[in-house]
Image (cartoon, rainbow, N blue to C red):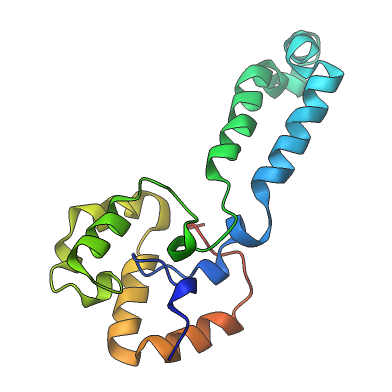
Length: 155
């Protein structure tokens, strides 16, 4: 039996996700710490004014807020083990229906919750659901495990 723990309820493969493997939140917070240490928010906008090539430095405060937001994307374990979003409506839906995942739901391709993921993942979760339905979960896990981690969101 395949290890379901590495497949999220929506069909994404947690084992391929850069959020889980690359610790992006840790790196973002380390960079934010460095920015605060050097006072980037204070001198960045001034440098942007005197040097047109560094115009983006005028957005130093927004940059720091974006780095802080990565902490909310922190993922230390797969979805089924409590990782990902704690308020995931898809997880709640599947658990309520006692489904292993959306691929077991006859309405999944017309689901508003799954449709919302298109903004972030494109069609990837739907492709995974189709693959699981046609090839089986075990075959999909073998294929996904062989892929390099780093494919969490659409490019």
